Length: 195
Ligand code: GDP
Image (cartoon, protein in one colour):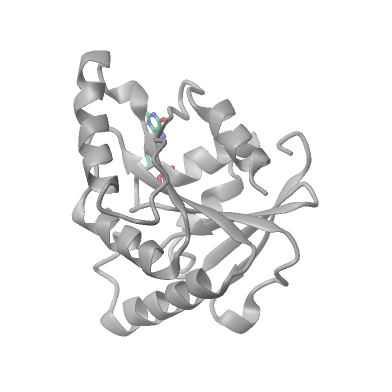
C-alpha cells in the first residue's frame, strides 16, 4: 500500500466538498505541534507532503491524501487552535462532527499524542467526539526518541488509563519516532490490514 503513489487530493471546508466515499479511509488527529505532518510524511515517504495542512488558512480544512488507488489518508487539523475566532472554531467543530459521524468508509482514527506529555484535556475532547461518532481510534505516541527508555512505562500507563475510559479506543498503543523511523512499519501494516 505504501509503495504506491501518495498525493494531496484536496482540502475540504464543507460536507459537500468531501470526495466520494469509494475506498477505505483512515484519519489522523492531534493538537498542533504533536508531530502529525512529520508522521504523515514519514508514513508515506514523501517529505513536505503534509506541510500544506500546517499553513495558516489550511488548519480549518479536512485534508485528503490518496494512498495508492485504494485508500484515503485524512489529516484533521484544527485542535490546539483555541486562539482562532469562536465562529471559526464552531464551524470547524460542526464540520468535524458531521464528517466523523457520517463517513461510512472511515475505518480508524489515529489520535497522536506527544510521548513526553501523555494525554491532555484537548486530546480527551477529540476522543470523546470519536466515542460519540463510534469511530474506533488508536493512540499513536509521537517523538518517542525524546523520552528515555526508563520513562516510557509511566507515559504508557497514563495513556492506557485515559484510553480505558473511552469505549471507541483500540487498546494497542503505537509508539513512534518519525525522526528515527521507529513504529512507522507497524503503523503502515496496521493501516494496510484494515478491512
Ligand atoms: P504538527 O503541527 O503536528 O504537524 O507537527 P510537525 O510535524 O510540524 O512537528 C512539530 C515539531 O516536532 C517539528 O519541529 C518536528 O521536527 C518535531 N518532530 C516531529 N516528529 C518528531 C520526532 O519523531 N522526533 C523528534 N525529536 N521531533 C519530532
